[in-house]
Image (cartoon, rainbow, N blue to C red):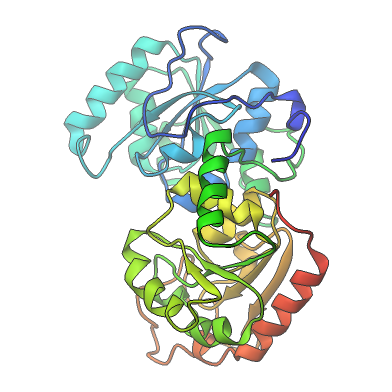
Length: 362
């Protein structure tokens, strides 16, 4: 963990661990007048962290509405006072859940809501909660209910584009995530049990969408030198165990083993991270680690590339990009954007990134 103060003089807290629960401290800063609503995918929440940091620098920690899955990413963060989980696909699904949460938010008396995701559902939530100032991007689906509409930049990293919701905010360099001390200790213990005491490379072969998964990871794992750690979610565990079995003396599996905060703390210790256009890429960016990012149906120009590291992509393929987030299957049926990316190109990018990056937090 880096020593010293955090960006803007924020002081890191020392919670026992991150957990998806409401954070309502008995003592501490007064209730904020700003509520940030971001209920998109996990990677989108990670890229919202610089905005939270800048808002907190101006007026103190903010409250955040997000999904239960994403809550561990912001719980205990120095820029956040309270996390309010919104289970929009589960217990809070439908108009009834929306009204219940709106009533809770109304009681908090927020003066302004920053609507990052821009959906009609989240703008309706802020409107029902009676929050007088509702700020979001002008072309968002929910903008009809906004009181303040900001132009959305078309260029730059997504973390920088989102800062346009708070005009005048300069770029926030990583790190944006600060794993709790106890989280780091658990990861250190896991690494000790795995006999990984020195530098290692993290491989993240998995992604939410199948078209974003580069099929060359198994061959790359065999060809790379040095210790490797596989990361992913619980649904990736079986595939990761099969990959680790190819060289059990050198490859360790953390997919489905470590929690989301623990995975971030693990990535923070890596020399380099090799990932698809996925959550692992954004976690690595958030903790300031270099990334070798493999792009297929999407392109870094969308704003989701690494801030540090290398990009490997099929630059000459006319059908790229084929969608904003990566389709479930290749629209043309051939998936050339990933299948034609050679292992040699990714291996070379890893060598470059390893040479330019220093060991992780450790």
